[in-house]
Length: 288
Ligand code: HEM
Image (cartoon, rainbow, N blue to C red; front, side, top):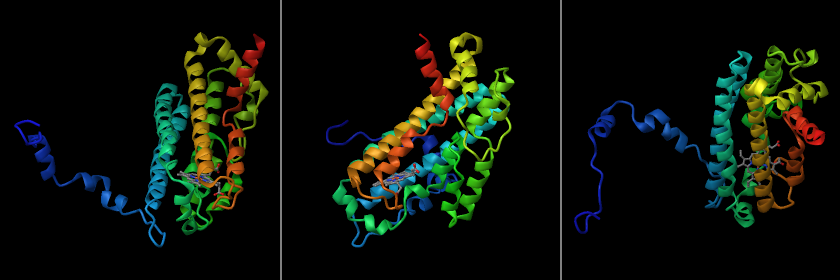
């Protein structure tokens, strides 16, 4: 309070006032009318908690959009031998991943009985049909052609995924960069059918081991390897929090997409994008 009963107020400063008069407003620039009218709860009678469910998914999809933007760029920068610039992109992705992982705590406030009030209205829709999530997986290297027909109902999504399936992943481009930097990378990793997932390669583990045993020699490569491990760790943290949130909301029930639910999600924790970066750790630890 300033003078007795009146609360302190901020005067409109000249700059702020001027912005209000300009042709483009905050809402125009962000297309807020469209964004904020894109939430369509379906439950009848209306259920208070359905909005949380929708907003949680929509915000995740917005962040996935930015992750894709950054990862594509990071991959293309690697192709152009711009390692430092690529790592800058990955640093941002890591922060987005932390936000996405932290965000599960909001959904965890949804109790099983609250979810049960609108679950039937979701019918067979499921996060399994998130084409952006699948695109992120493809970009990181978890290629799976069987995922493409899931999007038969959405030709634009399907085309995007088909294209990414056939392009080298971020990891493929990193491996190619290692070869250009003179590391002994097996030739079969440099020209292959990119639509198949990368297979763990013992010779690549040896090449990466040389980097870890003498970090000073190729510090930027060493740093990049650790950034990729951070990225994979973060991805797994997201998967784990999804699994645990799902478990506390639906327990052992099947998913709306028709899977076994939690057991299906648990299997994803065994996947790895960058197998050699993990194998090298075992080798170093066992060699001591
Ligand atoms: C009450 C909340 C949620 C429940 C009960 C739930 C449950 C499930 C289940 C059971 C699956 C396996 C497929 C299926 O049978 O449907 C799944 C997959 C998936 N969900 Fe969720 N989910 C929830 C929220 C979210 C949110 C907020 C997102 C954010 C986008 C999300 C993204 C995904 C993705 C990307 C998959 C595919 C995972 C994979 O293929 O490994 N889910 N979800």
